[in-house]
Image (cartoon, rainbow, N blue to C red):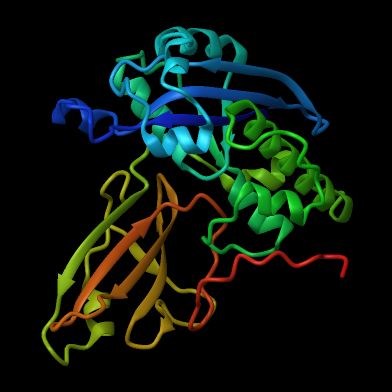
Length: 318
């Protein structure tokens, strides 16, 4: 597996900038820094890549971005153009790269910047959510609660010897987390490989992976009867989906009675699809949001009355 750990810093529109609405809609966030490091087959860190990027749309640094990244307005002129950076990272990445990042936003922002600059679509990559790998393997949970890089470093007892919120150092931290997570799991599961452990977490970032719709029912309507006849479709290709039985014995799992339901469907082309139905809060009529999602991690049936978990680190050796 050709695994490249990537981290981005980006800028966005500030109130003092008069940005054309149509242009802004094409690229909400503009990359101003990219850091990457290769994770080798033996899980050691390989050659790194780092570039500052000069923005062409959001030329004034947003106050919040400046505070977090410690970047100055002058520093935005010290990089290369995005198109030049891509010309350099393509040979660095090599064939069939998998870009791993902390969360899924970096892949989306990178693609939107490529599309804005009309960069040829023949540069394709697959993506991997390193945060999901940490939660699913190191913590043993599949929660969508977002853990921070610092939390994961503390959990795995890894050093915090580099500054945070710099693209290259955050990429190195993420690579260390991935490496340590896989090393610990492989020690307990020697029949596996790093590639086999990561395979369920790799996804296609070019797909439309999620769709939502809102429906309103009549008072007293039978929710289960409605769901049994609703036409669910794949968010990527629009194919009609059939809900499949789950291990609870039925097709639908009640996460929170009267408020939230969960089901699984399968698309022949795009694999497993998660379906979540939530009742709207503080609505005078029965209104529900229906979400279909191609997951970026292994499927997991939500726990009954599932609540957000607290971001409190528990010492695994305590």
